[in-house]
Image (tube, rainbow, N blue to C red):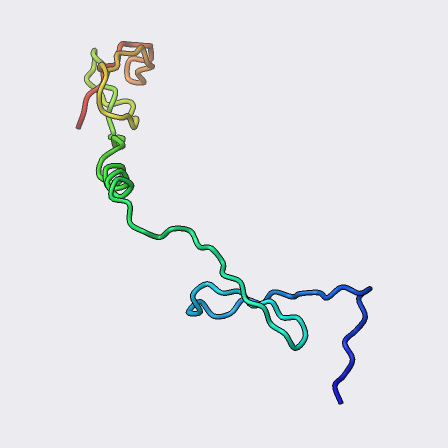
Length: 112
């Protein structure tokens, strides 16, 4: 004799259970002694050459790396400040404090 299923108001409930990945994308809906199968649509995993080319281009050198530059006092020649800056653009020329002269002087950008 079979055990009676619990009453659910006249409706049958289906509990999805995911099977192993090697089943071709099939979900099994378990509902008592009967089991229905339906195919799960998976996203297209084909290779897109344009997308791969874009990713390779971005990975190659899409970004400029920041490099360390120094601000050198024009009057004393001291390397008083260092900063990280992306290459390109004009050289910096700023008025900064020079500790040796104890006043603000013009400092110019200089690479190592």
